[in-house]
Image (tube, rainbow, N blue to C red; front, top):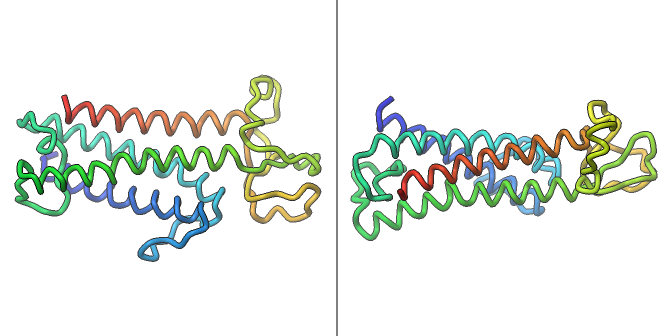
Length: 207
């Protein structure tokens, strides 16, 4: 795969990632999406839950593409070791060129990482209800209990997570199935691995 191919992939995955992460963040805060870009679920908690694996995978791919581009570059300057978005032939050694590259480094890498942290916090602070005892509503974070990992029913659909849940409510339409312990571990792992890949990319262009 040539440098031009990698540059096109970087632009494609980066654009999708930044629009999806920013729009999901806005939706999670009750704001409207920019440019009317739709996300898979506009409910704050559930949208954030869905966004974590999607944005993690996109960030991981983006970081790997960027690192591959950096390895194929003969320059030692960071602004030339990261792919250029859209403006073919831009002098990245100029002040304007460096600012342009820094801007896309910010929105393609740093904003998605911060967004993933926000989504994880949003999910882990959301309400979880046990269908066997609807009078008990706790946050997802309070269900991170190592005893559940050993003995809990974390593979069945006994728990639901979503927007604010009223105890003893009969309606669970704004909730989805939640697997205690196992699901938080997977979500945290996705964020850590994708953020680690992004950090490796940053080290690749600055070293």
